Length: 322
Image 1: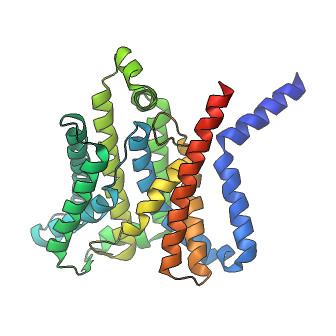
Image 2: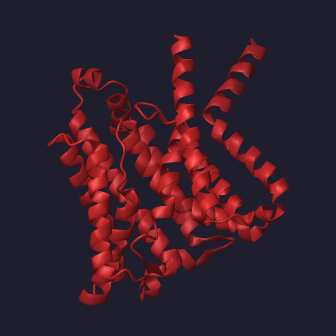
């Protein structure tokens, strides 16, 4: 019995935290090939950059859980903080209210996406692609294609300050992770995301308002995109029309690699955090290897392809088991 119990425990740990084991293994292997990846400076860089892809991935994951996708997140990440910065600059809004406004703008865009998808029955792929291009155009008009500096030191504090050995942005990210994990695993709403994506008809038969759940998933996606945009603007001290676009493909790859099914209903947010860092480590390793931007794009494309193949293989294995 003791041996069986130990075996069960080992299997559970491996299944529940498989991405963390893979993350550690990949980091050690790449570090052996590119020693500069293991320096304290690059460890800090990985932690900080992982915040952006992590926030975007968590928002994307809620939408994927319901069987949808949100292509507009990187546009929201550029648009929402830009409006917040303009509210400070031209209307004298205090920085903390501007941050709140940034998050609310993200929620508002997410609400619009959700309503268009659920009430007008526009496919999520089409609706969020429209939102992406519209917001991108709005930001280009607002900025004239130029980088807009953030003049508020308070706004940028979280991106530049240190708390002990880590940047403040990492601690803020930990707080976000805790809130998201509580929502996903310890609330009725969190369970309903899984049920809606797993079998929408059955969820409706059980009395779940699946339209409401899908709309909420897009609202969360918008909030997380705006949060990522705020963190990025605070770290860089500026906003540009396309400064978040490099995170688009990683934000899709991370959830799928971590076990989120593209058809919805399955995923582990603890593994997602590791998956986001895994994707970011690979991207940073390509840069440290001295390869150009084209190779970085190729790497991200291959990550997406690998993520899709993993999802397909996982589904086939599940069919064989049953």
